[in-house]
Length: 363
Image (tube, rainbow, N blue to C red; front, side):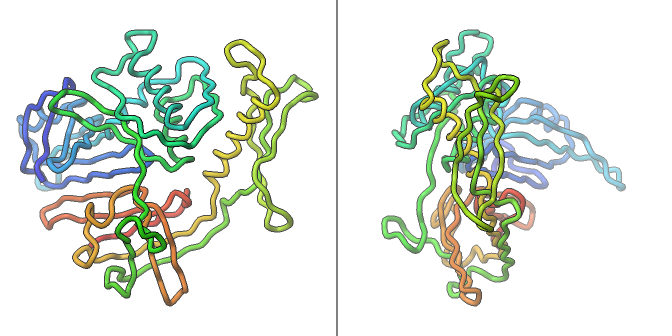
């Protein structure tokens, strides 16, 4: 796999075709990362400078170098290790500069945050060079949302996670642009007929061994959200989001005492403010689901081909007939590892697992 090296001005400076190992981790709702090991040479030291950009030849995904080190083994052989983040990492260099209250679609809210804090900010020094917004998808999900002085990438990632949107910044090397996009993976489950189905199962000889875990340790289904209050809490607003009773009720408190009751210096109505509190509760629930973990070994040489039959963000079906298990889950992360022995691909399923790993190794 050839690697294209660009400088920070998006000018191509080299094509690297020789290295020891290369790890490329794609993430659906979050920012991906990479790690590259290569021999120590003066040319490699110059090429793999911090802030230079790496792109794989088969993709317009790219990442910048944020870390490098020189290592020497017990034989006296030196090598270079560089690491970095996908281009969304540029958004982590900005905060949301002020208070934003957005009552609109989720897509429009995310694009507004990026535009105001990276593309057309009031302070020119805050512009992220070459960054533009991609095409509008007209997604219909809406949000009542307030945020202030938070990290830009972290807020965008939180919204993408809650509404299962993918995010990416594509490198348009021809026009020297960085294009931010939202997208949704395809539904490839066995219960739909619109897209080619993707089913992992022993019956299809693509699932070898497995480990399945079902956990409610971090599960919550009722959120009490507390809004802004005076010192004595006498007039504090509370909303309850979710439902459950008896032993099937799992409660958590979300403290939103700093959530402003004003929009554009005008006091919000109770309905408007409650909508903001409700949105905070929905976000908490989206991060506190039942954890179902499926780890399995897969045969990539079988009927399923990476990037043809499935890709990052797609929802697929996994079956283990012996357990009576049929699990539809989104592909949240794909790790590509290039070494002398060839390519290995690892897949992580599902955002419902905040603490457990759901990795599938493709052999």
